[in-house]
Image (cartoon, rainbow, N blue to C red; front, top):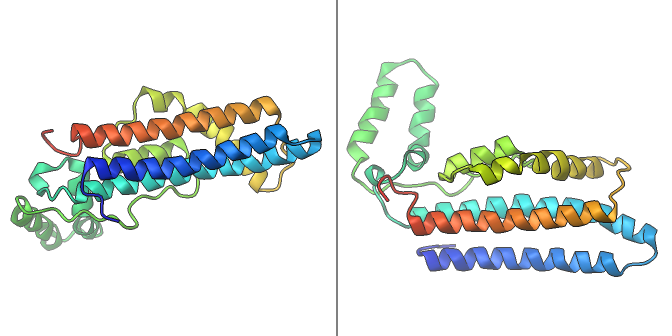
Length: 216
């Protein structure tokens, strides 16, 4: 996929979010209509891993959309924020970090000097790693990778993400007999939708404000 403009980025995010919200809404409707109670309880348990999957999947997907978008800005290393410079030069940094040889470190310096005003080649594949467990510290790492601020909103959601969503999901997928009552399920649903919406806003705002540039 090529994402060459803010409009294309917005459209890609809209599509990715729409089908996820539609599936979650359908699942919620099914649970609310289902009788008897033991069937509703089983569906609520089943819904929790799905809620988590959409949270992790959407975060990874839109972060990769944003990397794609920034890559097609065709900016030089000198125009990009440090995180994107680090991404563009990560193989050189990796090689330099694995040795004490000055000759290898010099190659890194030479690469930066020679390419500073040339178009950066920002990798898009195998960059975003949610570790199949999108805890707050992993989320911070994702945000750092793409240059998005981990602000007060996300800090305020840390207890929910790790203490409610991930804990409950892990218990269920590991076979524990964790009961999810109606109130708990609805709150999980509401909060996940809020996380998805906020993630969308963060990415779209970053693209419009040109937060990827050293000097927006």
